[in-house]
Image (cartoon, rainbow, N blue to C red):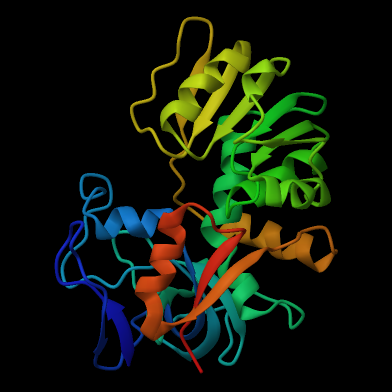
Length: 306
């Protein structure tokens, strides 16, 4: 099979296409022919070697956690997933493997997807939707009527967070570039803020801030957080909250339950899935560069099959 892999970690790591032997499912596993793989900021961190203390990985390493495809074969005892079924799943970051033609996955971690959902849409779900859901409800404990600020609301996580927070009855404010303000409103944001020309720190206090950017944006966000409020960050492992405020890093790991919810919402027409761009496997490096630019509108996807 074909795979995009790296042979060293670090800023100079080059993503190269390699041919690998076929995969054989073990007990409880299935073999999935990957049609599309979602690209996440986490993939950049893994390639850079910044996550070895948290998600240790061995070289050579095939990046990618999020995948969608069709079940090709099942190992002994792999129940609940039929050969030929269209599915979506997520690999552990330390294992990687989604930027490839095939992947192995435990049968009980896969979620069937409807015919109306494209493989690209499905591959956009696992980390983006799951992280947004966890940040809002598990970490942030968001309640109906509360005020939430979502930074980079047009991005892969932010676009899901805006929709989920609005559906939960929150008052949603989101930041984005000027060209994406109308998109934020279409997703359900009550207020859309141009992060270049508007000063979000002048807004009334929020109960919850979802920080997808870090740095100065995170530091300024403390100013608009009410006393007792929560800043949930996807960036800063060692977040330290000022007195009277709370901060927590969103450590997303398990996607299966979130995927079932996402597929159900999509089936009811209650979830929009934004695709920024689709790249062939041979251009995996360009797909990663697009994510690294910080300007993706929705999810960047690699189309692994032709």
